[in-house]
Amino acid sequence: MSTLVAFLEEPSAAVMLKAVAPLILPQGFELKCITFEGKQDLERNIERKLRGWQTPDTLFMVMRDRDSEDCRQVKDRLTEICRRAGRPNALVRIACGELESFYLGDLEAVSVAFGLKMSESRKAKFRHPDNLGNAAEELRRLTNGRYQKISGSRLIAPHLKVDGTNRSHSFNVLLSGVRRIVGNMRDGEVGVP
Image 1 (cartoon, one colour):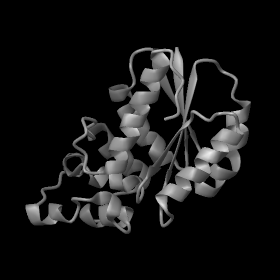
Image 2: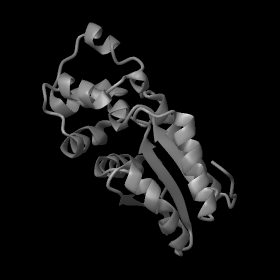
Image 3: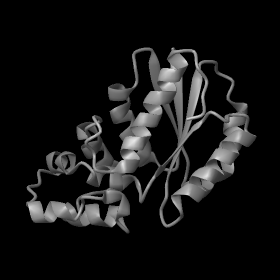
């Protein structure tokens, strides 16, 4: 059995990944999520965790929100931490905006999860969810205050489409990166994601 170990800044990201993993990971792969207490805890501790991991047939992924930082700088910083830890092939992905941008990229999943009906004019605001200033607040407003990080992730994530139709570019990049590194491992290749 091969493993994809995901280092995440928050439990709600683990809930989302556990829901979509069975749809994107091939048979013979399992997902293990390691969550931290925010982005600072993640960045402070992943080097030690990556360095100490000894289980064979393991791939690594690090994911965190961009929040108000520059996506490229965040990714470069995390990539350097992985390199220093001896894991230069770890997949680093940034939720541009935040995790909730992934959800707002699939309004049908949000509608099903919360029993909402949305007009086309209301949907127009979410055409580019990665560009929203505060996706979590937008999602709370859209659901009339019912969205909470973990419980909302449990409700929405099982309905997310993984076919590239999500309007969140960073969600689609995450999925394609996971598929690529898993495919490379299965093909016996080791490449930088």
